[in-house]
Image (cartoon, rainbow, N blue to C red; front, side, top):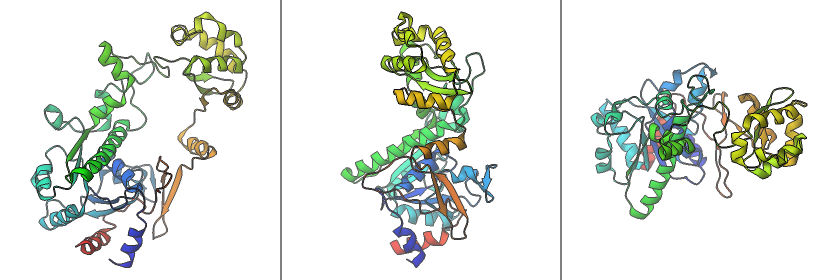
Amino acid sequence: MNSHTEAVAAQSTGPLEGVVVVDLSRVLAGPYATMLLADLGATVIKVESPQGDETRTWRPPERDGESTYFQSVNRNKRSIALDLGDAADRDVVDKLLSRADVLVENFKPGGLARFGLDYESVHARFPQLVYASLSGFGFEGPGAALPGYDVLVQGASGLMHVTGEADGRPMKAGVAVADVIAGLHLQSAILAALHERSRSGHGQQVRANLMSSMLSGLVNQTSAAVNTGVSPRRMGNEHPSLFPYGPFATAEGQIMIACGNSAQFIRLCHAVGCPEAADDPRWGSMSGRNANRGELREVLEQQLRQQGPQHWSAVLREAGVPCAPINDVVDSLDFAEGLGLRPRVTVEREDGTASSSIAHPVQWSRSSVAYHTAPPRIDEHRQWVLNWLEAQS
């Protein structure tokens, strides 16, 4: 191991230190899962085709000529470009797998079989390996042949049907939420499989797909559908079960208010100057507030329009009423910093350029999260990986 390899390896700290992940995934769901594992100390080796991960070309936006999309889910990884159709490069992959704890892939179901990298073939050679697979719509049956793009799943899962204005068209979310949820599900499955391996000594395959993850992620909406047989409807920014819960007009723009129970509603009425509304029998229960939300909105907004959102934010927080501003994404970072959350992290490269990203969302009382490697340029760490393999042999 050369000095550079030792320096980088020494920076790998966290609860997953010592876990090695070979990342054959690309785009978003898989790379998001593996980045979270890397944040927690796993050594993640990103194996890309010679053309690179598709998201390297997804721009604008970009920084220093590189896609910010790619940068969002690929920090703390080392990149090596390998052609799976080349026997010598496949030999490198096999050497990596012989030293790995986890393989993550999101090829089309069955697509790795021609390289001898399907689960059955890999498990026979490396029975200790946790083999994690992602697809769009499943692994058997008609769904296995469907391409797994997030926007297709947002449409097919019903997410778009329940998103948008009540009298408007179905609307996708502003982020690839199906990919993100699937990545989170895959990460938890990997951790569970590693824990099970510590008892059994054997690896196994875990499989997640975007469609099932999105149906799970729709929580109360899919619960309503499966229990009643009736599909939930679009309600814009309204909540089907809670009110007041959403944006409310003030003298200047809107403020988000969220009353999840009657005690919070009573505090809201007193804070905005209409205590009599709390005693109105129409609004004495959550079901009543839902049934009569139009009249209640008029009463509340009549008071809220007397001041702007900053005024009401201070007043409502003091009264113990849940509220928040409606920020754009840049403002949201400043808002989070104002709360002491420190959302921004920056990692510098050896050439002096830097990559900024959003901090890992979980804090630990004893373990640590490190940001030691900027999102890699394609094949940037070839020599590091080869030196690491040699040192492990």
